[in-house]
Amino acid sequence: MKTEKMHQTTEEIIHLIRTGEQAAFAQLAKAYEPLLQAEVSRHSADLSREDAEDLHQIALVALYRAALGFDLTQSDVEFGLYAKICISNALVSQLRVLRRRKMEFPLSEQLEGSVVDDPATRVMEEEALAILRGRIRAVLSPYELRVWTLYTAGYRSGEIAHQLAKDPHSVENAVYRIRQKLRRALHDCR
Image (tube, rainbow, N blue to C red; front, top):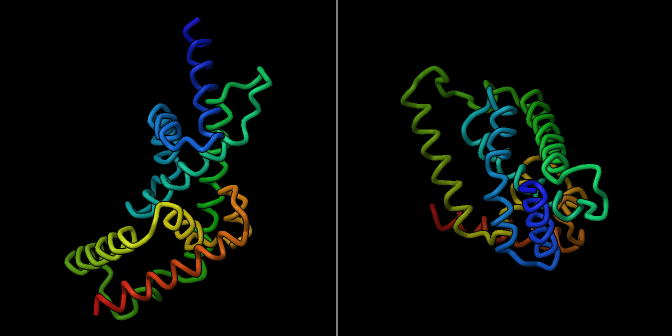
């Protein structure tokens, strides 16, 4: 009986999400946070903190897409299982992109001239990266931030549009706005 009540509540939340209710997605994300954390930690054992945070964002997008794509008329599969599969697939895809990038640009080439084993250098680089990410988050809207996260993960505009259930033209416009905003933000930092 409790499972049936939870299923009805989840179904109602999904209906609200589909009507554009942002608070409904926040409620769903809160309810499924343990699943998100479990899936991210399962896939991010050997990743940096920043990459793990990026995976968490990908997991949230996958949860949102799962809510949009779940067939409420069927009774064979619970939403939780469907969401878990969607999240896991999205994280595996993201990890493939990350591995491909690491193969294309080995760490030694990325950090030319820096001492990789020096803890002080590592801390300074991580702090600088955290400041940069903070500035990026400060100037971008939530939609632009989602687009930026996927764009920098290696997804093309069409793929991003498909993942976010948006028009490709909307994504291209967002990428243009993002570039303009980041140019201004980075220019102001000099």
